[in-house]
Image (cartoon, rainbow, N blue to C red; front, side, top):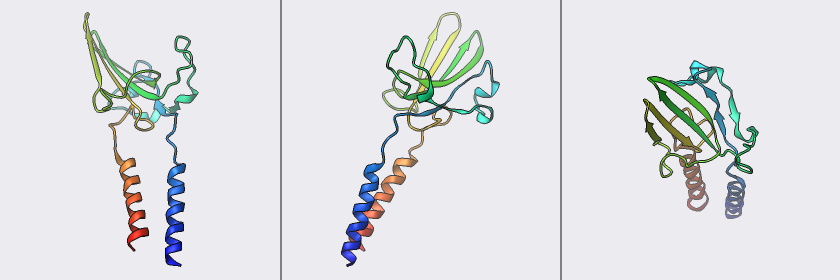
Length: 151
């Protein structure tokens, strides 16, 4: 009887784990520091609602492309810093997939730009990347398997 209960518990847990799907939509902060000073760093989201990127309009020059990432742009023009946070339609998260690193560009006429793109979690264009969710899922799975087969 105890083995049947363990097997039922394991099958139920596996069923729910298989039902977890990764979302195709992400929520991002959307603001500009030239119209809202709280959009600059350090970021204060008290006046900025988070935006569901699937609600963003399709861009005329990118038909069929939907935003799947968040982007933060830090721009310095003639000594003045500006910040832009938005949904990103194209690009790669971080540099070679590592969201801790941002793409930097400099140009003539005292222009500097930094592009930070991420898709690790909702609102990732305001805070550093965190690995907690996958670690928590792994610990739960190991605990379940240990409980079913060892106890």
